Length: 231
Ligand code: DX5
Ligand code: ZN
Image (cartoon, rainbow, N blue to C red; front, top):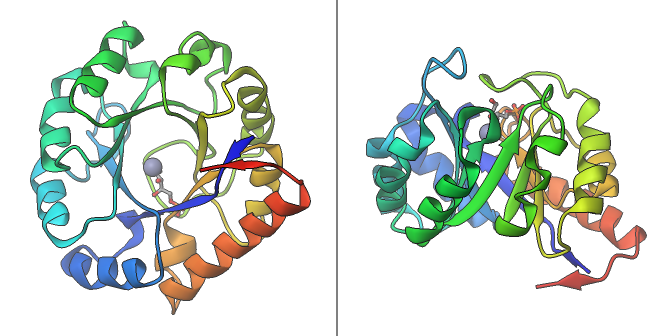
């Protein structure tokens, strides 16, 4: 039994001066999650969005927020981001940034947000294996985090398969980075069900139809694999 396909639109490739317009457009297309890339200029070489902007986004949408923390000391900011999201969505931290994963898992849980654990392309799956039964989602990075528009790194495929094998069936597996209509089937075949895309949605002339076609390809692939769906 596997969870159903969800598409998570990363606003990193949206127009920051027109978030409202872009968000309304993807909402109308039935987007499942809004992926918010939080970068601190330390863990990754880029700086993006803080709780202030997340709270603004929350004012214009009820779509659950998928908050991807690419920051050092994520535990310092969990409450601020959970508050900004009004407890509706998921907070994902990177295993490379914490000394005590159990502590941050309980901290995120205590805010009412769901919990995700993420790993970079160079980080082995073994690093997260002991925590899979405590999280709602594992996020496999298929690019080195920092920027939208990079090329998919195929090492992600075997990592997704291993996580699908080791993790509980009810755990979501998210993949993030370089996803296109041409490679989405490959990641779904390995077991990913929550698919992040920035460029493949916002760098097209019609983000709404881009979302629909990514979802359709992913769902058809999952059907072909004859996977029984839960929720
Ligand atoms: C990269 C971010 C991704 C990024 C994906 O560090 O975590 O979410 O926005 O962008 P695309 O889909 O363009 O690779
Ligand atoms: Zn991301």
